[in-house]
Length: 206
Ligand SMILES: *Cc1c(COP(=O)(O)O)cnc(C)c1O
Image 1 (tube, helix red, strand yellow):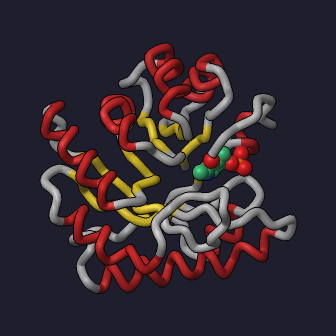
Image 2: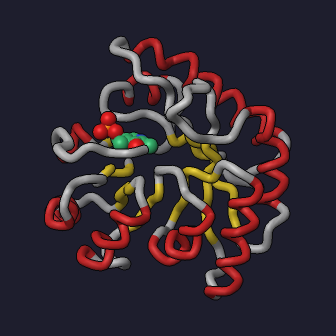
Image 3: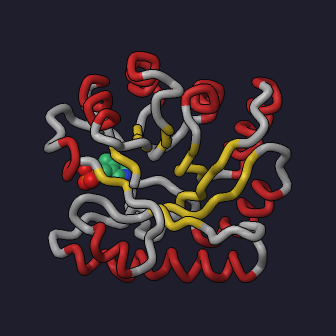
């Protein structure tokens, strides 16, 4: 489980660490830049779960252990180059797949997936861990099921072709209101914010 701490203060993360949580998710590099040094870069495993702009790739490689939001070949190449420059041996990444095609959400199109997988697996330092998706919001969580199922099927196809080496490709899917459905559809990583930290007060940008 990744505890999504976006908009919540470093103090809340510290408390969560004391309670035994180990993995935290942030969606903006700028916010993480403030928060992670206060909590401690090594105090937890940090996951970037929001869209990453190329010009923030360097900071992201410094701040995060895992990137869930890889969505373009250009970004993969940039991250790989930065890893070489910073002497970082491996950077685990998940490809974010855009299954809902909403204007406000990011992610790679299914049609671009093969090319992106090839770019990651052909890179020097990136390690393909799995797929991530953020389905459209539905009042009825059950409606998210087809999206979770689609992601699992994509993972299964890629896995059969050896895209994740000898690992089982992770499925990063499921949030506070739909995690039960995501688990039923095979989620291996849940990204839970509200259920852990409470409602977010500050507005967020994904
Ligand atoms: C905010 C966010 C979450 C967590 O959402 P909750 O509904 O608070 O659990 C999960 N994934 C992503 C990508 C997010 O931006």
